[in-house]
Length: 148
Ligand SMILES: CC(C)(COP(=O)(O)OP(=O)(O)OC[C@H]1O[C@@H](n2cnc3c(N)ncnc32)[C@H](O)[C@@H]1OP(=O)(O)O)[C@@H](O)C(=O)NCCC(=O)NCCS
Image 1 (tube, rainbow, N blue to C red):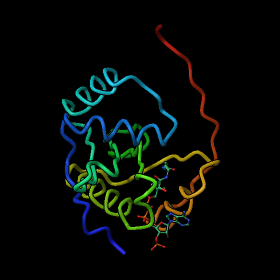
Image 2 (tube, rainbow, N blue to C red):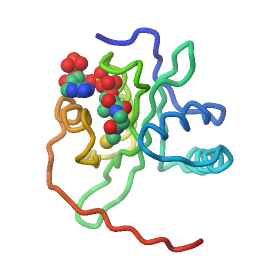
Image 3 (spheres, rainbow, N blue to C red):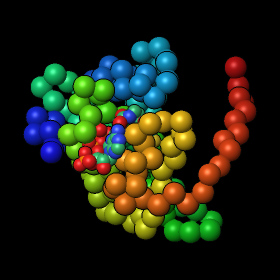
Image 4 (tube, rainbow, N blue to C red):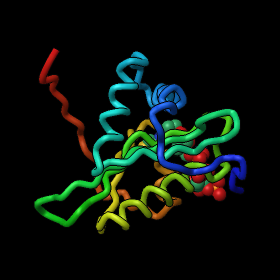
């Protein structure tokens, strides 16, 4: 079933509070000012896009994509920060968000889409399989702070 009340569109700067609430569902806790700065930077970059699912109550889903030229492949759409409000799940909102961001990727020359998901997440592996993604490998994720 599709959530008829949610419209998929490009994010705008004033969607930040809704997006921030969704990011917290992904475990990202950041101050509003930082979320505003991050969203502004992403929206300024034509290689990136944020799609939201907007309902009358506000933003109920979001996804961020960036197109990256890879040395070992063509232009790849990398997908991040997919989240749907807990009260709106299993209504096809994420499916619509992914369809929209894939369409953006195709329009911009991407030939591959990729997404990573935390193996501890309940629904995410089933979701990615349901929308046509193959689990290519299991990876470790290394990080290092470069500032601060
Ligand atoms: C994963 C998530 C984005 C899915 O959003 P959603 O809007 O509920 O997904 P959809 O309704 O579009 O689901 C599409 C299909 O995915 C599969 N799916 C989605 N959630 C599922 C679940 N909990 N269990 C099993 N399959 C599931 C189903 O096949 C579903 O189709 P169906 O409802 O017709 O059976 C959502 O659960 C979420 O925000 N989770 C927390 C954050 C997260 O894990 N994000 C992903 C990071 S990689």
